[in-house]
Length: 112
Image (cartoon, rainbow, N blue to C red; front, side, top):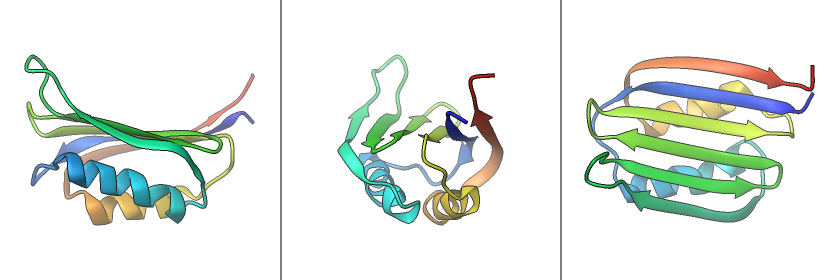
């Protein structure tokens, strides 16, 4: 196994701001027993594609969040070479993000 990749795409309301994204990225690694190496870094999107993008580098890979003002869409990726509990990560995200709809996928990445 190379790693686990949790992908959460959805529609959310109310909107999140940069501080919300930064807080999620600061707290989620602790919840899934990961160490932060760098970040979080959070930036506002360009006028052509408004929203927020943030990421944090963890000891075994990364966590990223992209929001899109158009339609209140969100995409979250949690990828790690170290195993983590999908349920713990998802429960934390649901505490912090009020999803109206969501699509969740958990992939096991491997060399095969």
